[in-house]
Image (cartoon, rainbow, N blue to C red):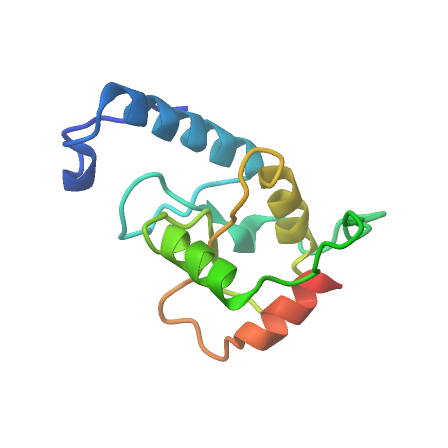
Length: 141
């Protein structure tokens, strides 16, 4: 794991010591999940290259989650707006360029959810025929 250099990118220059420690922890988690996408043009930390994760994981089962009684299985409009506002300022955790065979990505996302409530996926630039609905359905399976 390489530590962050505050002088390497502009957005990191004004961060406090505590925020730099948080970014180092996030970078360490992303290193554990898979190889980084080195062609990333955005801010640090570099996202995990989801295309290099294994397409099919043997004995993979989608995570099963029971919700407490009375809890809705979907977010209300106000809650969804809050989540979108939080995610807008986050750097993506994964960079994705394919539509199918995303079990490695799903497993990495489940591992990330142990430490973070949100997982953000960016679609790689220049990738043809990407369909968000198809990718979402593939991740649910």
